[in-house]
Each structure stands twice: as structure tokens, then as C-alpha cells.
Length: 309
Length: 293
Image: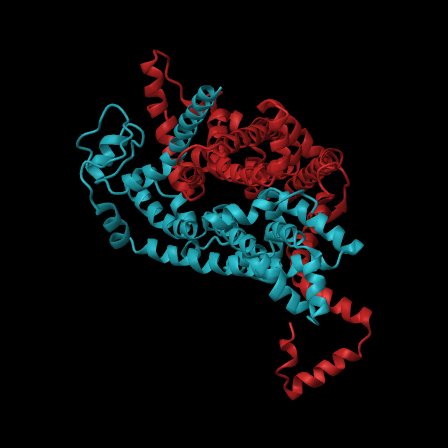
């Protein structure tokens, strides 16, 4: 680390001298902002300030008539039937899909952790859905779940009736499968890495003491995995919002009621140029997300304390 | 006892194998079906995509999932590339949108995460919490702000309206900060004692330590933006500038064959990144501990 003493041009020297002249606090301050400045500035300009404007829009009558109406827009949104359906469907989807994504990927990780052949090939296979372009995913899901699709051929073999999957009450199930297919692989990788980080001695001691696999899992592994569980939960939540892209491409702007998600609501409101409604919906969504995150942080605080040094 | 273990392992192998192949299936299907001739595609999928184009000679009354084409042919590729050079143009659009986003986002994030690691004042902790919240916001929430800013800055309907918000997306800052905070502080202290400045600590100690994380984050960001659909539709409505991902998503279901061919071409960059860096993906992000970092 002494290379900076080797080559010094005159210009650098004067700059360095001036720099040296500053007191420690100023120097530290300038340096700290050299690093985080660009990002903080960018985030402020592109996300925070405009979001404050959205909050402002949500409490006025219209951009042309900035009369302060406070909660009126919120009441309109909350009273909106489409909004209610959208919230219910989105919540239902997340409540089914996110825990499944966490539990199943942990299961897969535990399976691949045990010494089985072709392990690394399987890992690659599980990751492969990340590469497939959305368009192709949509086509294949249509082939599988169309009225005349592959799933129904299988149903017929078992003597069951055909179902138009994407228009039936099973529609959410079809989307959950799609979501799991897309996201399990990556979640699994996160768990595999966390499993590999559990101190081996602990597990060996447990083996010597004759602990059962069950006990080892619940008493040792799960405790060490808890931060990763939280991390995977958060990632899965982010991704559960992204599945809208596939729903939209599979079923269009107005799908069956069961698949009408919050994103449909926001998209359609955006297209109708109803900024007040849209802003109010965005603010509500933001508040809910903050509440969920705060809750998750609380859970982490009370859960993972004893394993993190 | 031993026998039981073997049996258990065999069962696990079978279950993993079944799931692994199910997961791989759509990828394989996309690639192999792109080498089918239009007539074969029609025969296989005619029952589903009734608006299929071209000769409708034979349509199987059952939909058939076929992995191996009867006759391997490049006709779909030829149709896609020669008859509509649009695809190549859109592919290039994707490249010039996504490559800057990945580089700029990871670059900005590397700087910021170093800042968040080395200086932890109240303000910065608050900002970091804010990043986490922003990161979790569904795209539909940030869409309106993005739209407003692009309008004010006059960059709506130019590629900058996608690149700028992409550059500052908080996702990589969050992930990188977490891996930087794992660097033992003794390493940084040692560098300091050797007389290294902050910039040197950053480039010679922290960045090499986070190589895996940097690569895997770049990969995740790439995959995310390479397949973007919503952002360009709203922020970049000019079809001539839109990336191939948007175009692909709007391909008429009548052109299944071409869609598979173009999708296969579109997968190549991701595939190359994957083959290059799967180990990084596994090692790099892997050590993400708690959320709060």
C-alpha cells in the first residue's frame, strides 16, 4: 500500500498539500460523500423526491386544481370494488406463494446437501428457469394449461374432466406453480450456502450424542439458517410482485376476477390517467410494505440474536 | 442401519432428479422446438394457438409436447432473422440498454456500499433503511415517480429514462453493502496502518474481497433487465427503441415457432454469463446473512 509514494507529479503534490491542510473531520466528511454521494443523490432525484410528489398528489383534488382534499382520494380507492378484489387476490397469492417458496427451496437444499450423485448438475437444472425469456415461459405455460393443453390431456387419462385452468378457480394455482418454478432454484442456492456455513463441529457433536436428523434440523440447522430464512422471504416477496409480468402476458389487461392483481389495478389506473387514485394506491401500498418490513425486522431481532455474534 | 441410509439417499436422488428435470423442461423445450419446421409446430400446437400462420396442413387433435424435432431445421431462425431484421435491431437495443445499466448500477452500488460500510452515521443508517424499503416496492409503485421525473428532465421516451432509474436501483447497494460488511475490519485497519487512503482501501482491499458478490449481483441485475417488459412500455413507448424483451412478449401467439427461435437467441447471453459464473453465483451472494446487515 505504499505505491502512492512512488510517482507524484507536481500538480498532484499541490492538490495533496491542500488536501493535507484540511482538518480530519472535513476530510472524513468529503471522503464519505465521495462514496455514497452519487447513489444517495440519484436515489433522491429518481425515487425519493418524486415519491414525495406522489404523496402530494394523493392529497389534492387534481394537478390542475390543487385543492387540499386530504383523505378523499384514499377513501375513493379503498371504497373501490376493483381495488378490494385486487388487494385480496394479491394478498392471497403472496400468502400461498411466499411461504411455499421458502419451505420448498429449503427442502430442495437439504436434499441436494446430502451426498447424492449429479448434485451440481441438478443445481444447474434448478437454476435454468432464470434464463428463459418471459415470452417463451408464457408460450409454454399456455401449452401446458390451455383448455386443450397438456395438463388436460393428463387429466383425461385419469378420467377427469377438462379444466380451462387459467380461467378457473385454479388460476392462482397455475401462477403459483409458475412462480415457484422461476424462483425456487435461486432460493435453494442461498440455503445451500447457508447450510454449508453451519459449523461442522456442532453437527458432529450432535452425531456423537446420537441426535436424530429431526433434532439436528430443528435445534441446530434452523437456528443458523434463520437470517437466511428472512433474507429468502424478502427476496421471495420482491419476486412475488414480479410475477405480474407473466400473469399480464398470459391473460391480458382484464383476466378472470381471481387473477386481477393490484398491479392490474395500478396499470389500468395509470392508463386511465387517474393520477389521484394511482397516487393514493401507491401510498397505501408503500405504507403496507413498510409495516411488513418493520415486522420482519422485529422478528429477526427476537429470533436470530443468539447465533449472530 | 446402513441399508436404511442407502435407501433414503436413493429416494432423495430420485425425487431431486424428477424435480430437476421438470425445472429444466421449459428451457429444453424452447431450444429444441426452435429447430422444428413450421409444419411440425402447427401439428403439435395447432389445437392451442388456433391463429397459427402458414400452412395448416396437418394438425394433431391432441397437443403434443415433443422434445426432439422430426427434422432438425433452421427455418425458424432464417425466417426470424432474414424476413424481419427488426429482431436484430431490437437485440441491439437490448444490449445498449442493459449493458450500461448493469455497469452503472454495480459501479454506483460498489461506491455507495463502501460508504455505507465505512461510515455509519445516523443519516446513513436511515438512508440504508430507506433503500431496503425502496427495494421492496413493487414496480408499480415506483413507476409513477419514475414517469414524473423522466417527464421533468425531458428524457421520457429516450433510453435514459430507463438507464437512470436502473443505475440507481437500490437492490445492488443492499446486497453489496451486506457483503462488504462481512470483510473483517482487521483487514481494513491493517491497510490503514500501511498508509492506504480510503480510495486504496476501496479498490485494493474491499473490491477484491467482494469479487464473487460483484459478479453475481451483476448477473442478477443483467437477468432482471434483460427480461424487462413493463418499464420500456411506459417510459420508452417508441417501438424503434424498445428492447427485444418487449417485442418478444408481444409476439403473436400465431408465430410460436419464431418466438421459440428468437427466445433461444435471446437466451444466449444469459447462458454464457451462467456458464462463466455459476460458481460465483453460488459463492458470491451465498453469504448473505441478516437483512439489516
